Image 1 (tube, rainbow, N blue to C red):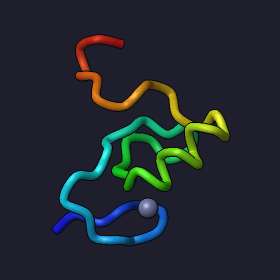
Image 2: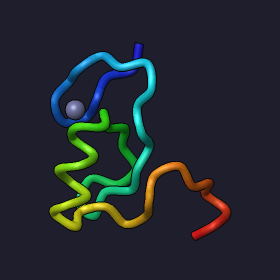
Image 3: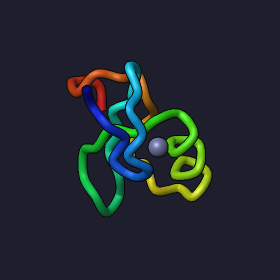
Image 4: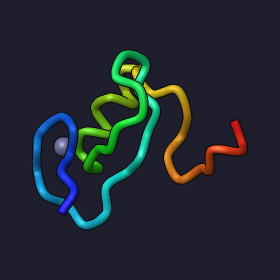
Length: 52
Ligand SMILES: [Zn+2]
């Protein structure tokens, strides 16, 4: 089971994101919303690595 990098919550569908400070991590949707609103994410969720 993968855990959210920030809150440690077990989730089946974590979002893989590129964090400005932490690099590539996985977040649950709640933490993604927080980090996204804080402008800490470098790319939008759901994209593939080849489409930067
Ligand atoms: Zn979380």
